[in-house]
Structure formats: structure tokens, C-alpha cells
Length: 323
Image (cartoon, rainbow, N blue to C red; front, side, top):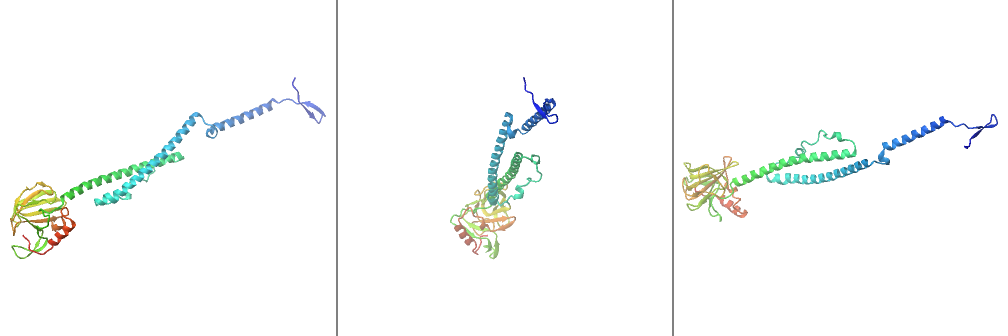
């Protein structure tokens, strides 16, 4: 038998039994249920604060791995940037200096980079900012590599042109002259051997026996080969490109034809005494852009500095020329 509860009533000075209230019980139950549901909703809406599902744990690990990979990728980009900067320095300060080309400016190297933010939609979380930073670096490196590649293409072209230039310009003596005993007269005012008066001598005279080989002093194409009534007798003119031409006069025999391509050191004729000449020799001239210049500056493939100084001294003596 259940015990009943009583409450004292001061008005009647007696105890009255306490009646149970279903309504009160219902209100208490409802309040507890709502509180429980609110607590459960809070826990489910913030799972990372308290607990995570297996799926959420997998996604969290994947995010951490992606973040680590992006950081490693950024480190690789930094190393590539260091290498690229070193290449840029060598390109501007070594390769382009050698080939006498202007350096590529920083403005040119940064061309096309900056301005409109292509990754603005990635602004937000730290992870998105990391992705944006990585894409920025990749884009910048790609554009800089394109510019550097174009620069190297230009350097290669310059190198080929330089190689062609160095092989074409005059660089040796026209006759074998190891002991510098064949140089008879240099460039400048000289006494003409036949006219017997001072006259500008626009070349250098190399004495040698008739029939001594005469060599092309640089690669080129024969512009003239044979006799012409200008005092040079049998002579050859070679067009070396780049504005250079050379003339070899008074030959006993010409060994090339007009239009023929020749290489430096190739025999183009033989020493003689034809034309307005006072003895067997090779009169040699160098022309640059149509102007006759001193050949003394074009023997660097043949001579040591000491030999060059000696030859220069001999060529400066005001003696009688042979033509």
C-alpha cells in the first residue's frame, strides 16, 4: 500500500492529503525533454569540439595531408626560385656580356605578372590562402621560365652569329710570316717606288718569292678574281660579310673564281709582280664598310703580344713601299 503525503492547513488546524498533479508532472517532463534535445543539437552541430564521425576523421586527415603537401610544394618552389635567380644573374652578367647584348631588365622578366588577382575566389580560410599562394608562385615561375627560355634562345642565336663573325673577319697574315721577315712596308704615307713621291699606302706589303702561296685571312665569298687595270695586276677581293672586305694584289696566279666561297687559311693565289709593282710581293688591304683601314689590327690569330709589338713597329717605319 503506497504511502500518502499530507500537508498541514493552518486555517483548519488539520492535515490534508496532498493530491498529485499530472499537469505539473507533464510540464517537468516536457522541460527536461526540450533541454535534452537542445543539448543533443548543440553536440551534433559542433562535432569537432566533442566527437567526430569516422567519415569526418578521414576527411580531417586528408586535409592535414593536403596542407603538408602544399607546404612541401612551396619549399620546392623556393628552391626553384633560387636556381632561377642564379640563372638570371649568369644570363645578364656573363652570357650577355660575352656576346655584347643588353641584359634583360627586371621589368621584362616580370612582364605579365601581377595586376588582376586570378585567385580572388580562394580568399578565406588558411587552407585556401595556402592554395592561393602556391598557385601564385607556380604562375610566376611559369612566366619567368618562358622569358628566360626566350633569353637563352637569343643567346644561342648570338653565339652562332658570334662564331660566324669570328670566323669571317680577317685574323691572320696573308702569307706565311712566322719570323716577321716578309713585312716590307706598312699603312700610311710612303714613297711610291715608281712615282718616287709621297703617296698614301692603304695596305701592307709582304715580300716573298714568286709562287709563294697567299691565304684568305677569313671566311668569305670571292668578289673579284683576276686582272683589272687599276695597278693591282692580278688580284683577289673577298667579301667577308659584316662590312669587311680584303684585297690581295700583284699575284702571279689566281687560284679562285668570282663567287667562290673560301675559308680562312685557304690558298687563293700566289705571290707575283703583276701590275704597278717594284718586286714580288703581296699587297694586302682591309676594308670596313667601304673604308680602307690599317691591316695591322687584324693578325691576332697569328701573333703573340711580343710579335705583334714588333710587327707594329716595323709597319710604322716611313720607308718606300713596293707599289
